[in-house]
Image (cartoon, rainbow, N blue to C red; front, top):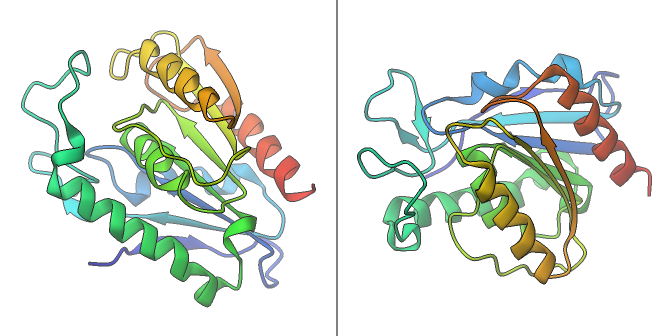
Length: 214
């Protein structure tokens, strides 16, 4: 199992110094977040938007990192850890991220991993295991306890106060758990639903630029 991705080369046309990888949510696909690329305006940065490995059972063209139980509403989370599809996605995404240096020339410590909704959960799961530059979690949640391997990993979390898909309480719980592991969490609540507002792109761009100019 491997991942296919939509790639945007560095705007300068030169060899990229940095890499941004963004993971879509449940039922979407790589196209969903790829539309953000022109608006992020990240210099010397290649952007990759992978498709999740599994076809969505109800959405034509949709993909998923793992399945949800029928009528799942996040109020009583099942034991995702036991799901074979999550474990397959976890292994596949980890191996793919590690392999990117060979194709892009960009090491993990110059790579930012981002994710929306279920993609945000995958970002927190896999991203805390790798020596990445940082993580961005948009309307995300924790689907399993974190076991971070790299203390002080910078993490940007943005969540909507009116999110009717992933309740705000799950973002607050994620922040609390991440802070117990001494991770550097930058947390924001916005007056929005389950979405990415245009103003968030400025926050994301700034977060990446700060990491890459340290």
